[in-house]
Image (tube, rainbow, N blue to C red; front, top):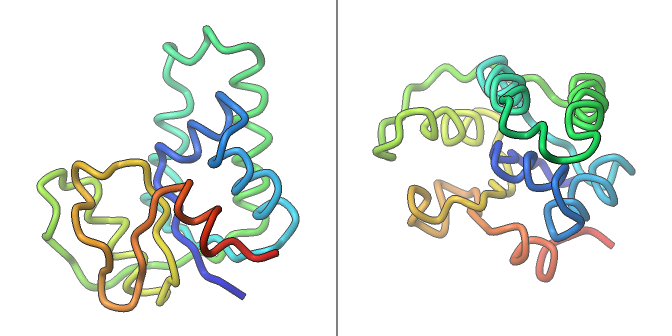
Length: 139
């Protein structure tokens, strides 16, 4: 089974609109087609970002966010990274690389191509939601 780290921006997008992030989260993750890896730090970021008042303009956003976070906490493989990595200028994004490194993730799925400018990190492919869905998603 694929091991995947999902950047926070993909989680947010999955709740807002029915596009590739939605398909990845609600058609694959919820149906146990891959294993999501998280750390306590990434989970805390999910909670912090998903509770921002700016998302109140989207109908039922907080209710759907709460449900998704509960699902992630129930199913995720919780990892505690040990090695500190400093490759990305946005320091918060380094925790994603640390997590992927520790859990030997197959993929990092991110919509952030400004900071994740390289195609792989060790053996982990760094892909957009669209690229993952079209080329790597389990059937």
